[in-house]
Image (cartoon, rainbow, N blue to C red):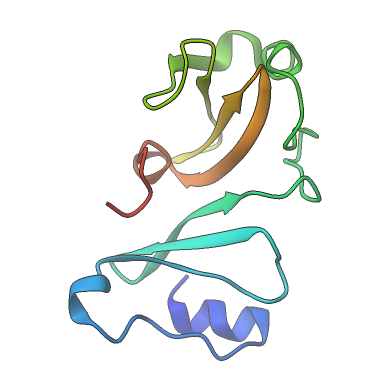
Length: 130
């Protein structure tokens, strides 16, 4: 989905950054989805970042869900890696979904702290659009 298509779908006038240096990868936010950011790379929607407990995955995982519950839900399909910036108990829990789509749960204090879903390559980005 392009920025124009996304803008039309949410019913808001949203556009790419004015500075060409920022247009390779950037986030947009819609008033319709508080606590959600939409990552665009190379002009296409590539990832959706969720920072609100009001939204869950199709499997019912949301911010505040325990790591144990995530592991029970996804079992062996789950990739478990240490978080790059916080303590050893904090994790990146990643699940490959259909096709080239994945979801990654960042955890803190044994609970989901935020999550993002999108293309597998962009879900691996630890620092968003850096």
